[in-house]
Length: 506
Image (cartoon, rainbow, N blue to C red; front, side, top):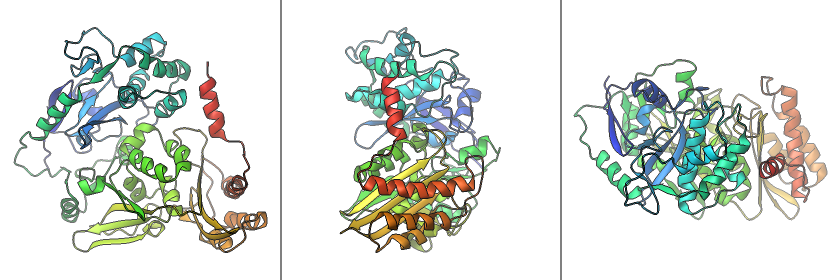
């Protein structure tokens, strides 16, 4: 099979690479093909952040969207037509110019404010993780400082949650995040960058079928490709498929990328629901959901690190079907439906929990794809709480995820929807517990009875994250916590302690 040349912008100039295999990662292309070893290889699974780079693409509204991503698990062909920055580019890119003198040539010896702040605040020691931190800071700089927004220590910690430091410590790096906004500003010349991206998109392609890495731009083309190539590996952000490449050394001779289909990248809103395309990133999807349910803010930023959320998609997380995928318990509790589509049979909708038939198994036919997720808007009596229990506060996999969504009116539970993760072979709906709550008075006695039902409803396994007994105990305790919070109680919050620690860090 053949692939068309991979094309992207770097330092304001087009880069074209031929014969890039469909399963080759962006990190491999940078380090091995281009010799750009400033981008480091660490964990190989999107956990340490040493490989972080920043991508830029047109947002359709005359602006550039900047995303810090993990290059170790990002397939190289997925950045076709985008702009790319590594830590080696910030002082070399002619499109990054001083704001006050943007018409003057840039001093080639000048560091970017991100780099200068790291120097001034002593933010680097061994230096291995530094390129990743610098690139996460660059993404933050473009998205926050260049938009006139201030950066709090808590915001900086959230944006840097996908980067691990083993020697310097986080205090000087957080100092640098705040210091960079005080230095003489620089910014990407977006007008020129958008023109170059447009020209890149118009570059004639070789008259050959892109058989190895398929990137349809419409849903109809995507479904036709799925029908024609049912054996192709489907990818969106590849934040899990990338692990199959780096950790299991699996090879994929053919890849079907869903992220270029315009319909799958949309978020449509009606008075009754929100329809989130399957290729919408987790960052964008959680922003939309948090706008409707502000209580989800902490849960959203604890879903992996920011570089993973910037690449991963909501549809990919759902279709993947991992029993510890955090979005599914939330969507189950929100009574979401998934829409599946095929070229031959059109679309069909079903409750999200009905998608799964077993561990990483689902009801989709070989020619079907998940195209969007439809979430009803909240009711006036709805109370929603999402709880994530993990060993680390940031950038960790849940031992237990429990999301409770109760409609309570007149002191009675009118309706209950509960999603759970980490307690069964698939993300599940706690139907027995819902039945124990629905129609009952919202009292401590009702909650105590429902706790016993919830603890007995599942038989979680013991593994490296937690024992089965611990998981059952936590399930009941989280329901009790929901009750206490609904009564105005203020249980100790690890999130508040975490934020206070960051703000007070010297």
